[in-house]
Length: 203
Image (tube, rainbow, N blue to C red; front, side, top):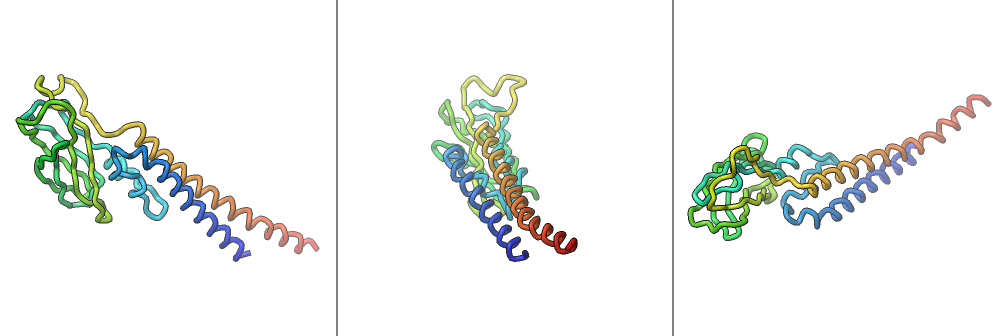
């Protein structure tokens, strides 16, 4: 019986890995705009660090839009604690400065947009390393306009979108399904043994 249970557990573990691998592969195209925040990077021992993942995929900037020469309060997370993060403005890379993350791996930096920045769409990037030492980038689209900062009452623009939440949901479903599958297979392996024990006692 013990061997059968171990085999079932092993199959459950293999199924879990297979489901997760398939999920992450399917999501890879959807995360093209935020590849460095791939959900698979935040799974450890079969558990998803939801907080760190959402911090990584949800940077924010205020105000947005902003005028050339204006200051944007840029925040994000998902990095190693107390690590250095470099802030850049793209598409033509311009280093705006560096900052240090807090104990949770979050950063907050007031970025001054160069006065010669062309109006239009740009990206703010925060580049550093995650808790495993891998390169990590938080990226957020911003708009530079000569009309000044965003109108009063406008909320900060964040990097979260429906694709990222879909990815989080599918990853959680995959983890849950794998756990349930393995549990059911283990119970089915134990059930026949219990029946045979009862029959022996009655005879």
